[in-house]
Length: 185
Image (cartoon, rainbow, N blue to C red):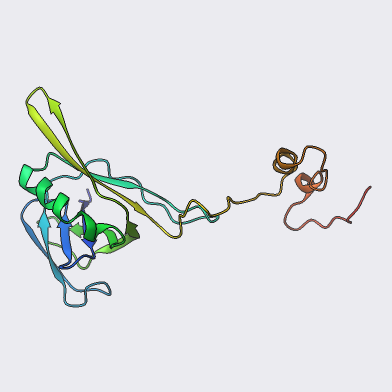
């Protein structure tokens, strides 16, 4: 039976660079194209709500939010103090693989490169006390609100914009590899 052990690594491009991983203790990671000399990552326990990372497809960029819950009041204080440095910083998210003896098997496999947004810190009362949370919304690619949405050029889309315009009424009959004469039948 194959053993498959992976942990998530974060590289936050602030000054100094912040290296975190989803395990416990310190993790020495060998060099790669992001950090040629390697780096030492601090374990933060487990990350919660790590969204599935997606590639930018059809011009739609992803805006995931990473959440770390159960942080100490000191960590929350540090996050609030460094909030200004984080906005606009580059975040690399990847994974490291471990062998059967929990020894790292090479450099991280980077799965996403993001730009950080505003750091959000919060706390809520629970049955056992107070739970402190840090959320980091990030964006991939160009996700400004002013970007136009992707147009599919379907008859339904065109009719939403202009109910009497029939310019796209034959689009549904078009397909790759099909030739159709333009104009009325």
